Image (cartoon, rainbow, N blue to C red; front, side, top):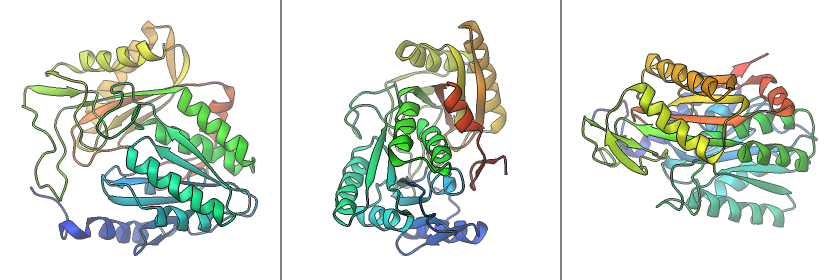
Length: 330
């Protein structure tokens, strides 16, 4: 294993120190592993908090800032943050209008955010939660009850974040977050496994001639293994799974997401195939993202996330955003 680290035990705090140094618009509590907007809570605005295991950068800490999250709670690599982090973050961003927890559907995240929400309520902080479960590949995996939360987490954070910036009440911010999740589907493909620093070896065995179909974002294997194929066939496999679960039509927000180790040129090849696939169904990618947004350390591969747009979601997606990982319009 060759990784640009100082030591296995210091990966997350060292990364957070770097995040703080690179982005003065953030306030990073390295000791408690919490990332916040430097500007603090805004009175009357719903606070958005998310988090999960590290290793998925820029998710979640890279999406703290105007138009998205107010705070993120990074856990250790592929490990849920603890309730104390979530409570501290929720209290810090509470501007009196309540707090929305955006939770990926992984068992550890779900249980810890539930506990945090209950304890926040006891302290007088109103908390609502939205569960992201967009992955169509696997039902009831080793890590989840039900579908996994993957790429649509970014869509929920961006669109709910835009709604929160308008001063909308907690019920409205929650409503739009739930709508994004309900209208989004994802499917991922791995060309190689990732290597966690603690393990020092790939999380599963995959031959050079094989791909894993339907992977999650924690290095876990997917629904099937097959021979390596061209980009068009791999994209069609992913899109067929999405289309079978939620038929594609009309205008869509589409993300071709790199898993951390795939060159951007290959992701654009994949997006071209997605665009052609949608056109064949009479649909189109009205809004798009191509790049590394929800990663799995150094995994080679990609995921596709499709969200069916309406006028409200399109307007909120287009609204200004300024975070380390996503920015436009300001």
